[in-house]
Amino acid sequence: MNHSQRTTTPKDLAGWQALADQLTLENRAFINGAYREAVSGETFACISPVDGRELVSVVSCNQADADLAVVAARNAFESGAWSQLAPDRRKAVLIRFADLIEAHGDQLALLETLDMGKPIGHARGVDVPATARAVRWTAEAIDKVYGELAATPHDQIGMISREPMGVVAAIVPWNFPMIMAAWKIAPALATGNSVILKPSEKSPLTAICLAALAQEAGIPPGIFNVLPGYGHTVGKALALHMDVDCLVFTGSTNVAKQLMIYAGQSNMKRVWLEAGGKSPNIVFADAPDLKKAAASAATAIAFNQGEVCTAGSRLLVEESIRAEFIGLIREALESWQPGHPLDPATTCGAIVDQAQLARIIEYIGIGQSEGATLVAGGKRVMEDTGGLFVQPTVFDRANNGMRIAAEEIFGPVLSVISFTTAEEAITIANDSIYGLAAAVWTSNINTAHRVAKALRAGSVWINHYDGGDMTAPFGGFKQSGNGRDKSLHAFDKYTEIKATWLVIE
Image 1 (spheres, rainbow, N blue to C red):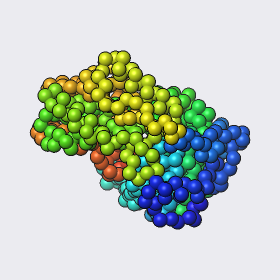
Image 2: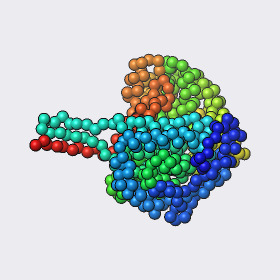
Image 3: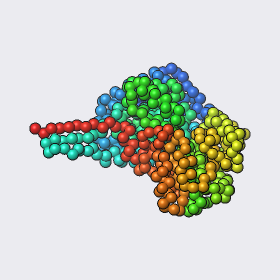
Image 4: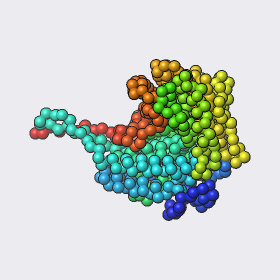
């Protein structure tokens, strides 16, 4: 990628394709301030789900590369060049980083779309601004976070301070590569840590690019490193590494559990996990606007092709409006049919890879075999493009005993479950191993608060879906994980609390 390149944001498919043709794709790891090949020389093919072509061959890191990165990160941390820099100076560097992300927004958005298939309009209009905002907001906050003084006798002073952990390894998913990375690297860097970012092998290109922008912003060598590769190689190496102090992860619940085991097998490194979800979207008959609720429910399952940890994949609808509401959902989903991801008019793009497409198609078959009623979608489309596309799919008459309603599919597959009372809705909603997010639609303020308080979820939205900004903490209950991203609470993950007690003689 040519980082000096400045362009006018394309307005149509042809413009974005022309920009894609101009891209030079960086494919190497970034360690100690420089791009480099993997020690082993191994690579993996980066395949675009847009049309099935190979974008570039990316270096595949393993234990040897992890060791190099950890040594670089540790030495940089101990040098104090970043960890002992005044918070306002770290803030200034990170704000420059955010500025550079915005300045290269077209190229970063294009990499995101080509790499994992999301619509270019969303990559440019959502992912890029949200990434820059996460870095800038966190930077602005860091010199406004104070320590504490304990209540002590007059001849004693009890100080409570926060110190950076040291070396932080961040393993991030493929569905929102930049945003998920920013939620982790921004507070980790802001608090003075060194960071090693391991992007998913399914979408590594923006992470690799961000490394150069971070260096251009003024982040010292060794403080921010990027290791592309597989989870079972370099991801495992980082999780087991005896000199990694903190491991943060967003991804599947099964992998999250394994990372906790690795931490216990190694140095008891701090582990913070954001894992799966099967979020209930509860619509009561007295919802203030059923058409709006249906449009929101369609977005909640079709946005980013349903490859969203907070996707509203369980739609709980009061029985008296079930038939009407399903009709409204089908109508709303007409504007979410798959299209070419480089077309700014497209709302639903390509599924990230063949394995994920096969998983979604398999679950659609499971839903039919389990006895749910397929009422919309359910088919792969646009196969002639070489890309990976599937229609948003709706099943009626589902229940929590069905796999489609209990297991995270990570695709645009919606299970509709009916209820008759608020108590029943709460029981159904909480009957899940997950507890990431939930929504409630009602005009009754008492119902809204009673249900919201009863829901076992880290985020609850009332009369909308997927609300909040950088000021709101994000994370889950139960097997949706621990710790929180975003907000001032994110700093808790990357700092140790120290109590210093002084007796005045």
